[in-house]
Amino acid sequence: MTRYGDSTRTLKAVSSPAVPGLPMAPSPVLASAYHLSTDESAPLDAYGRNSNPTWRQLESALAQLEGAAAALVFGSGMAAISAVLRVLAKPGTVLVIPADGYYQVRRYAAEYLAPLGVTVVEADCAQIYEAAERADVVLAETPANPRLDVVDLRRLGGVCRRRGARLVVDNTTATPLAQQPLALGAELAVASATKALSGHSDVVAGYVAGNQLELIAAVERERLLAGAILGAFEAWLVLRSVGSAGLRFDRQCRNAQALATMLHDHPAVRAVRYPGLADDPAHPAASAQMSRFGGTVSVELADAAAVHRLVERSELLTAATSFGGLHTSVDRRARWGDCVPDGFARIALGIEDTDDLLADIEEALAS
Image 1 (cartoon, rainbow, N blue to C red):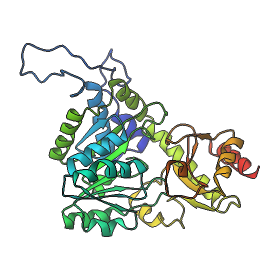
Image 2 (cartoon, one colour):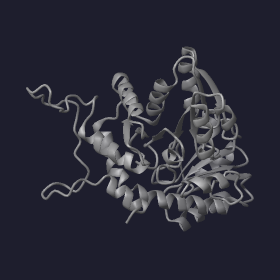
Image 3 (cartoon, one colour):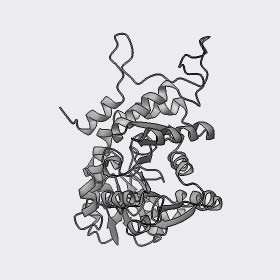
Image 4 (cartoon, rainbow, N blue to C red):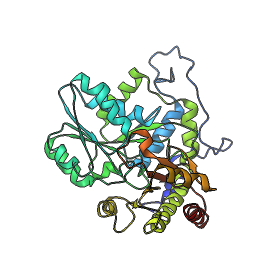
């Protein structure tokens, strides 16, 4: 078989060699200190900030899923993104970042990169192609969180190649189970593994993946010196979770499609955004580059109070700002400073039975 399904891919990615007498589960947690050899030329682990076996197994799994030559794990998605930007966005360069993506990226660029002499340009998904014509580094987030607009990565990749710009893609919302940025023109894929890949709402992690080993080595050097590492136990938690990510993400995407369809013409809902809806503005680009449309749906209700009532009256929804976990969650994004209406909410679908979830939300809205 040349290509496995996603559940098989995720399971195989974290599988250990079948050695009789050893556990079937992912490798044990290995901490920071190691015995040294008297042979000082031996390539042994010496200190956990440099590398450790648990990291390497997880990095191998993530590289397989992203279709990359190598991957590096970090203590968070922001740690991964900021490390890449420190390597690529040098003083005097022009950096394009998403105006409609994760708000912390804009804050980081404004507060730390711009004062160093980096020209920071904010562009939304529709504007990013023109902005890339004058850029040295382009960071795209697609689907963009929280509005779920989609960047045509083949088109953007072409612009960046002609310009000689570096293209980095935040693949958090799609995950490598729905989108392969490196195959679509990106030089690096970055993501928060906190979300659907870990999927249990109990660990914070991030990663970078790519095919240019010199570029990966530069990011690895930045991780070593800055110390933005992932703990060995957290790496083990992600490894434990990735094996079931294909199964979980499939249910989340099915739930999202069903919910978006139900809410599309609901009288209590002013607007719905989901790339899987045929009339969604993002659908053409998403259909061309995504194998599925993700586990999050964006909705606009009447006001903030309507969002709070939805959560309070539901038996299955919980209020939380992260997404990709087992439980369906709701986050009113205006509370974080996103430029969205007060009643705008991102619903991150969990793995509940679809019929139960739809009935619960319908009842909560009707109340």
